Length: 385
Image 1 (cartoon, one colour):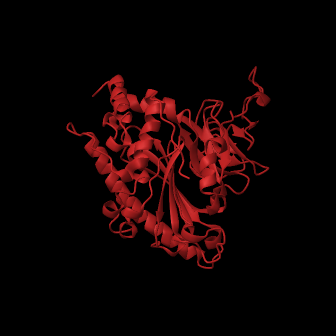
Image 2 (image 1 turned 180 degrees about the vertical axis):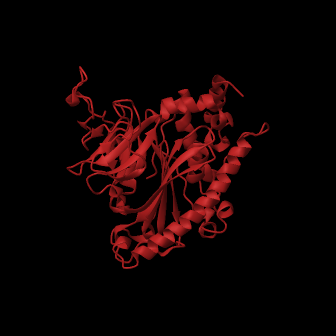
Image 3 (image 1 turned 135 degrees about the vertical axis):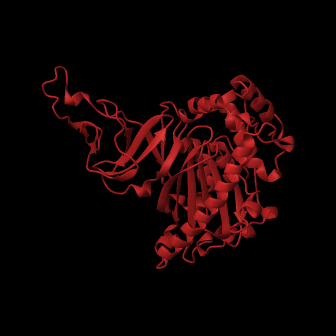
């Protein structure tokens, strides 16, 4: 196994190649425990990470939990229906508090029943009154930075991180006509796959694999020669697919007046660094949010839903069922492909090959990873007109 310095050197050399002669990242970037520790420190502990849609937290007490770079987090609606994020660790003996997602009137530790209000303040602590020095008012769950952007919930451990809206302002303008902020999440799940988080991220970013990996599902509807893969920007990459969708909800609903011309049939595939991946169509969306769980496993939040026109359609439930059925099949195909890649990356003779022009987003992602982990300066990338 190479040292961290050697892996960073290999990545730096690879990232400095021009796109016309670009190759995939070296195997050590995916398989090195030391490199993963570097990613957790320089990427996941510093960046904004998406945990889901705000539409899934509607009522006071609705909550979602998440582990970010070793820090358990809970995001919830407080009594005034405001989104708040806190450390999900009890202030007594440091047990984790809530799990998964659900609704609660208060946050109760299942170890000694210390109980917190939805604003993070300590409501009660049994058998603590005789304890000298204990003052309930001095205990409050530490706040975690959280923001909402176009209906997405983001959290970060970095007090200096620029606001999400500031970082993603260029993207907001590019996709404004979809009205993504009004799309409604209809399902959200969590999974763990046996692959590296970057393998799964890269798999989402490129459509080169669609005709082969997804031959039984979406592949036949994918015309590679018509795909647009422009250079990405500093905080994200993207590409467009214009097609007759395999599902009715893939194109704009007849009552949709926001989208015109080709945009009624155009899908945007968005990779928001480090690990928020969105497929945005005129009628539905689905997304992944990834976090490493060791070099060989990735924790994945997977969700999706419909545009407001299809939500209001009498057949909405049927549309959601059809979407979920298709995506479950697509995920099974992707899981098989990405787990095979990770097994191959661990081979002694594994070596990266040249990238296709359809894999431009992977090249841009490599520039991001190299900048964050190895300090490799990126050339300015301009958005397409």
